[in-house]
Image 1: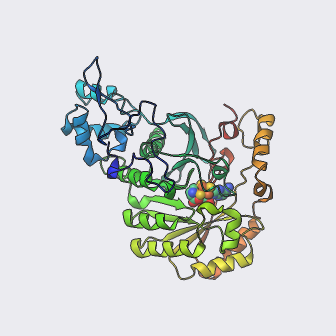
Image 2: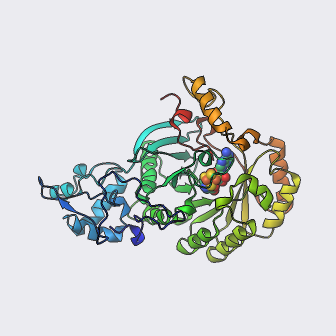
Image 3: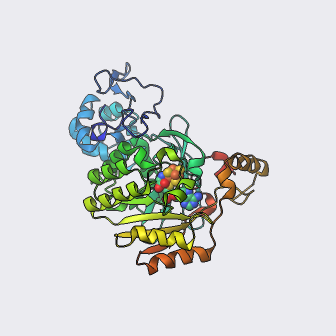
Length: 428
Ligand code: SAH
Ligand code: SF4
C-alpha cells in the first residue's frame, strides 16, 4: 500500500528507524508486492480492509485514491465523494455515506472510522479543550483545541511520548513509545475539527507542538500536511501550519525543501551549549551553531520568519547575561522570540483536578517524577525576570513577545501533555 508521497506506512524511514505501523490492529500482514493485501469477504464478495499499513483511506493522498478504490472493488470515479465523506463527516462509517451506492459503501466497509478513539475530553474556562485519545493498540495521546477570537488552533502530537527526553517537559519525562502513523495525525485534526464544528467554529491552524518531536517522525508529518492542506478536504493553508522542533538540523533542511510555506518554530531555551546541555539530553542534542545554521538556511529557502521558543526557568536560563547572549545570536535576523514561563509539570495534590482529587494517586505520581533529579530543582521564573528578559531582547532590537499558555489548569499547556490517564484526568 502506498501512503501519501508513496511512503508513509513503511517502517524505518524516520530518524529513529522506528516504523509508523505501530497502530496496526493485529490483522496486519506485509504485502510481498508492496501493494494492498486484499481478500474477498466470503459473505458480500467485496474486498475488505487489509489494514496492513492502510489504517484508513485517510492515509491515501487524494490523487492516489482512484487507484485504491479500484483495488477495493469500488468505482474509481467516486473518489471525490469518498474524500468528502472522510473529511466532512469524520469518524462516520461508510455505511452511512448515503451519497454513495450500496456496493461502494460495502466495499469501503470501515474505512471511514477513525484510527483513534476518544477516551475523554476536558475544557478549561478559557475554552481550551484537551482530547485524550487512544490508538488501536491502546496507547494514549493528547490533542488540544484552542479557540481564539479570530481563529481555532489544533495542537497535535506526532509521537506517543518523546525520545528526546528534555528535563523540563512532561512528555519527555514519560519516555518514548512510538511514532504516530499519518492517519493518526490527520485524525487528531479531524476529531478536533468535528468538536470545533459543534462549537460553530472551523479549525484554521495546526501546530505540531503536542507530544513528541515532529522532525524525528518527519515523513508521517509531511504526509499529514499534504492531506490536511488538500483543497478537497480540510483545505488548511500551508502558512497556517507550524512545526516546533528541539532542533534537528537535517530535519529542518528537509522540511524547508519539502514544505517551504510551513512555519518553523525552534525551541532554543538557551543561548550557549553549556546551558542547553542541562535541559536537553545528549542523544538528540545538536550544537547550537549547527542548529542556527540550519535555521538560517531554512530562512534562505523559505523566507518564512523563524519563531524562537524560549522557556524561562528560574536560575537556569533567565539571567540578564542569558538574554544578552541570545540577542547576540539573533540580532539582525527575521525572528520573533516567544518567551514562555516554564509550566511546572509536577502535580501538586488536587490542584489540577476539577473534581474529586486523589491525594494517594498524586503522591505516587509525584514520587515517580521526583526520581528525575533535575525536576526537583526546576522552578518557574518571576514575572519580573520574564519582563526583564523581554526588555533586554527588545532593547537589542530582537522582536520578543511573552506568551501565556492556554489551558494550564487542565494540563493542556505547552509541555504538559503526557497522556497519563491518572494525572490529568483524575475524575475518570
Ligand atoms: N518537541 C517539539 C514540540 C513539542 S514541545 C519541541 O520541543 O519544540 C512544544 C513546546 O513546549 C516546546 O517549545 C517546548 O520547549 C515547550 N515546553 C515543553 N515543556 C514545557 C514546560 N513544562 N513549560 C513550558 N513550555 C514547555
Ligand atoms: Fe520532546 Fe519537545 Fe518535550 Fe523535548 S520539549 S521532550 S523535544 S516534546
